[in-house]
Image 1 (tube, rainbow, N blue to C red):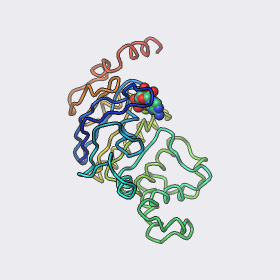
Image 2 (cartoon, rainbow, N blue to C red):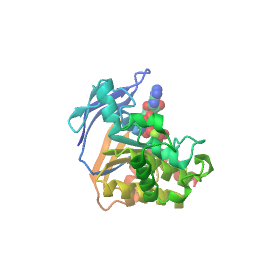
Image 3 (cartoon, rainbow, N blue to C red):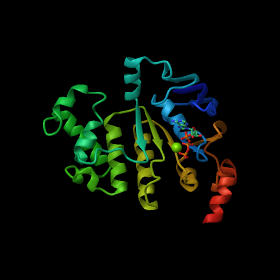
Length: 254
Ligand SMILES: Nc1ncnc2c1ncn2[C@@H]1O[C@H](COP(=O)(O)OP(=O)(O)OP(=O)(O)O)[C@@H](O)[C@H]1O
Ligand SMILES: [Mg+2]
């Protein structure tokens, strides 16, 4: 279980990027995080993932404090959290296989010295299982930078699966993809989270997809938590108020 208690973040400019966020997310829940640009979504994900310090309040994962963790505890906590980013963050010159194998490094530091083709047999087999799950086993030897954006994001998901996290933190995972690839990646992300009973927290700007994939919707506005609802009969319009004037501007442009 993930527990956020009065979590507040101020950057140097003293503006509150996040203000007194209280949130409890049960294991295996699938949460879509919504909100306008600058509302604090990425900051929240980064703080949950231990990539950003918090100014006050507390974040607990399965009873362990992320916000107060010392270096060694933090390493263990980070292993439990898998990240999927908009920009994939693959190593472009390495093969698909090597990129996915890297996902195991957090749990198996010794494998650093045993990279492909010398990695332990079971890790190499596991790498192929993860690549099969994302439908890319046949591209294992291809250089990562020779894949399409959608394929690269699927490699990033395979890398995340190697890590066996209990929580997936996905920050706009489909923002760089065309609509078809975006749907494939969302199907995959939600599918692997369900199969493995992983908690998923995913930010999305595509409200139509948010409505189809979310089982719970959390919304931020100017750093405050202003929406927290289980799946209901939502439509795209029922979230438009979160975006205020920005949404109207967007509609005028399109
Ligand atoms: N490293 C930083 N230093 C100073 N201010 C920051 C930093 N990171 C984020 N902020 C500020 O915190 C606020 C929240 O930013 P954040 O990136 O979390 O928003 P977001 O909801 O993810 O936006 P977007 O939809 O554009 O990705 C913004 O006002 C932003 O300018
Ligand atoms: Mg963001």
